[in-house]
Image (cartoon, rainbow, N blue to C red):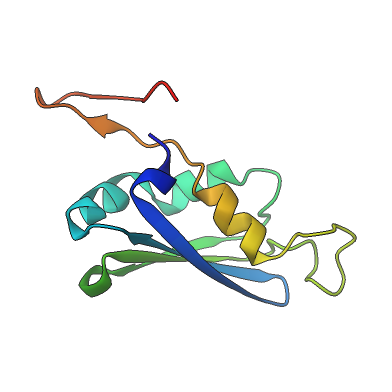
Length: 113
């Protein structure tokens, strides 16, 4: 399934750094976020866009994860030649991340969407 089916996002940017929060619609899905939306998964999802470090912060009381993506905005909103390279675009793109669906037998599979 795509991440957007179980979570929404908020974002901000400062200079060449983007900050993306992923918030589960239902707290029961927070465990899926912890398991599948890792710094590594986010870095791979944004390969070729994010050139720096990706740091994940866990916010269990609000069932959310916060990611800080360094060197992610082509030099910054005011310096980039890209039309819309700032955080709002990246948060929408992150919600397209494919995650595994846990099955009742304990296995998992990707959805066919």
